[in-house]
Length: 228
Image 1 (cartoon, rainbow, N blue to C red):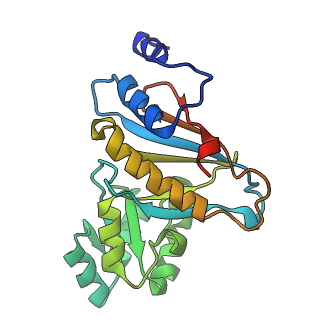
Image 2: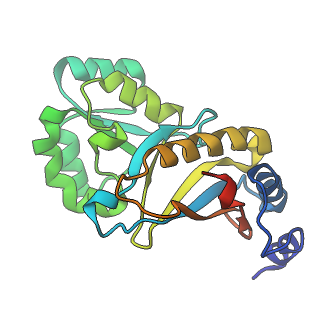
């Protein structure tokens, strides 16, 4: 571990559980890199992602965005293409972009939005989009007839959350430059969505642990017993 990391780790107690507002203030303090570090939250849930009825995934628009410019590819046709362009999509088209991804390994975008009737075409990209987490999904609001809203939401800082194999959700909630107050609003929005998505099959304690960290900084433990 580098000196900056070690210095940052001295600012708080490793084993202590902090209220989210304190944790966010500490995380901003520990973000000492020369670039504007991303603040991430890691939430471990008391579910078993191997069971279909205990999956937790969805999307939420962060009130203050992510601080990242989001490039949107809209795989749509006809009037939906016009709507996507008007809403500010960076790339709009259909077969030509599917081919570009397949043949040129082109990935100059962050989010794909599409309509249900295009999923036959988009499905061809499952093998390459799936592992990158880029496959459009109705639960995330990226497969929809309201393509303008999908583009606007993506641009506004909509993030997807989903469990990994170890039942942890990893999500960015903004940049260190946002400050603790704006990060708190984003944290609350994400947490509210995750709690709302609690599967009926989940038993016992739902939130098992929660850690906040900047890109290069140490993790600060959040008092998960107060999170619901």
